[in-house]
Image 1 (cartoon, rainbow, N blue to C red):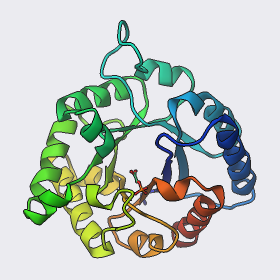
Image 2 (cartoon, rainbow, N blue to C red; image 1 turned 180 degrees about the vertical axis):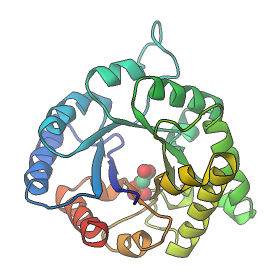
Image 3 (cartoon, rainbow, N blue to C red; image 1 turned 60 degrees about the vertical axis):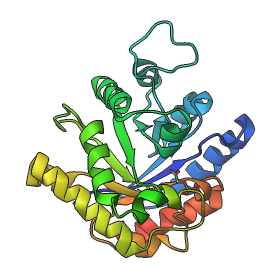
Length: 255
Ligand code: PGA
């Protein structure tokens, strides 16, 4: 059975004391919960990753970066490498988030380089894909998703874990979620593509998250879909109580 992943993407939010308070609150609440099949992941700003991994040593918590350099090391001012993330025990890293594609013009080729570097450093990539509103209106959602999968997973064997996050761009931070049926349709498509390209077993095992205005109100219906294995949560992950509520909903459904 696939595990359910509830991942918070803080984006460029919180200062040090806010981040610390969140982790104190979250870990206090997590330790009294009983769960086997749900994994909680937080992706804070790179500045707070070490603080975060200090908490993850003691508590069942995964920590993820929000981005990584496409280069190994050297003269790349401002960048953070995969081996740096590894050296502070980071387990996951988002790549190809639509905000990086849009504001930093990241290409599938660069995203693919990042994915390889993460795998070489034993960090699980969370590959974000998703169509814009314009693309959905043009009826090319499936083509866009498949081309992002093809580009992002080029020469990747999937012998090591990769998580896919389907995030329709029009649903991110807008309060407008994909309906459970719309999301399920694309998740199924992603799994089908993985099956054709790899194996049935890999397709059955791969974790596919939904992201885009997921909150405690719409999460349950989304998680009830057979191909949705959890969420990549932005806005609703910033308040510890709200995020904890979402962890509880996941535990209730998937324990
Ligand atoms: P949102 O962000 O939940 O605020 O829509 C999701 C994301 O961008 O990962």
